[in-house]
Image (cartoon, rainbow, N blue to C red; front, side, top):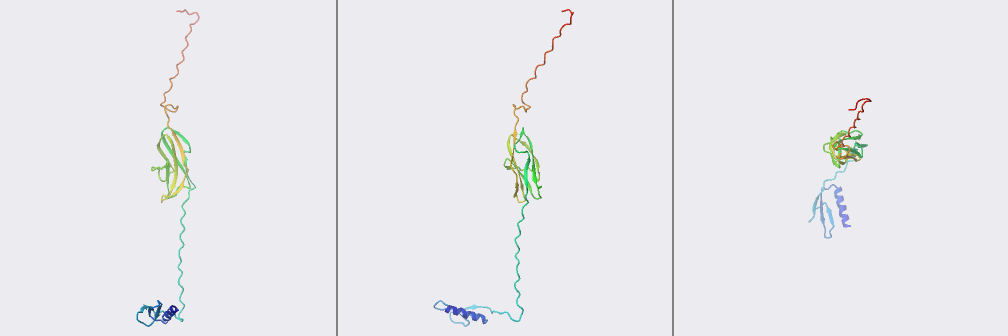
Length: 204
């Protein structure tokens, strides 16, 4: 009860426009406020409270602060396909030779995007960034895989195509396709018939 009275006294002093308030705590731990100093009291500085005048115009309401809505994240361009058109899957070549890889990209490659081709699971460093066709020099015997990807300017993958596998069969010496295979000798020429003597001719 005494604590409530102290706060009421403080409120009255503030409403009266007192600039200096004194605060002290009694032996029971109750905090008191007063506009008169006393031993042990601590001065609390409170500025004068100005009440709005009733004759002036009403204060304008604070202006509303418009918070801009977060911009929608720009959606990345979508490709419908990025496939290897040639060689087709499971094609077989004979002999060590260059192999031309042709891609099909729909829609066409956009500005700032680049093509990345993986051969046997590793990116091909010599593939031009905007080329849809390129010749791989000297592909050797065995099975090989090729796959196309499209990346944006931040190297984010926008499209990944299916993996295509092709094969190279090196021509051996025993293959009928090899020019180094020993060829069989030509067949002997047929024997000419022996001429028969004319009738009545002397036999020598």
